[in-house]
Image (cartoon, rainbow, N blue to C red; front, top):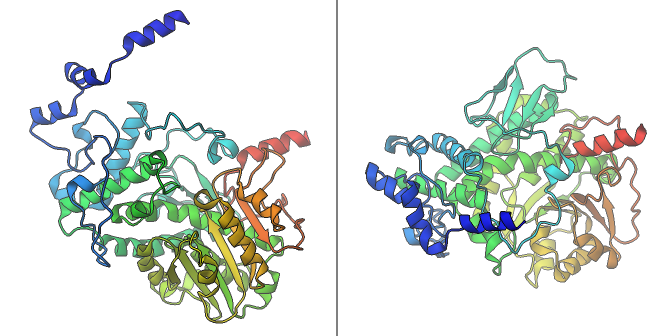
Length: 504
């Protein structure tokens, strides 16, 4: 131990000597850039984070901050010519996205750097993929790498269709990903493939709207995209410990570069996990009354962002209405889907703090209202989103990390006891949700929709019901003979291992 400590102390370089040491070793980015006479301007400068202004031109959609107010990547790494993008390529967002992915992989694999950690923050439990999913995921795929025997249907290769003749029951008709490095494979059959294909078409329209928010100067637009990528990867708001809690701040959510990343990646995760949640609710007979009588239903997504949860809910109701098929997707182009999104007697609304999401909701045909869950009038804002007294279902998707507090628990209790909200369904990332005990203490019925026996407590998909409802739901967890549209959403492979060991 003494030898290891001495060796570690000998390797320590005091802060005031680090830049000089880098120059001696040839690892100083500024020295390299001066020698080459170049500047790797397509990536954010790698200096300490700076404070930035929240001032933006009203309703313009354009980011008008100056250079000193932008978020600066906190990584300190060596620049490399292979990660540069030429000036004439700055207007090509897909090429820049591929370069940014390559640079992230280089930092992780060659330099051993991920997002900057907070020494005071200790992780109590593994992330969901490691806690419940597979560890055998490999290093992922390169941006231009193809899956053998499959063809990508989108430019990033997130959705891939099998090239061989497929049977309707073929479990690998489609391989898709929900992470940017394409490490975690998900499989689905033909119905899931058709839904994902339609989702890609819808998402292309949302990305077209997003493209209009960037600066008309190609170089400036490239910097805005690079900033958005850095924010998405490094999640600086987790380290600020300021007044805004959560993965990203409201200001960061509103940046065009960040939304460029969010739309590309969160679309698949949010849509598929929401669909899986709705399947569990249906098989537990939660939606029986709505599936037989569709009159005047309102679906409200709290903190719903651009509306992928609403899109999943909308399409799921269509799926159920026509006999559990996706045949209606084969006869409609993406334009028709966006123009005729809402079923006549069902209304969908996203309530979110960030007002710039509204431009995407309007493309989908859904309603939007700016909403703060901590506002004293939050209850009235939810109940008055529609002027009639239609029954409501509230959808929570990854927002409890922002609002697990007594005031929010009181809000949910009031919603579920007012007579209009028939259920609150929740899809979250963390395995342990503090809101569960807080609502149970208030008499709210909490049903956990995922298996709790084979890998420990799992609160990622929840159902909150009014007092007096039965917490024991049929077919929960899902029976072995059930065939979901999107298997393994969210990650549950390790539970299958535990179940098989129990049987043996």
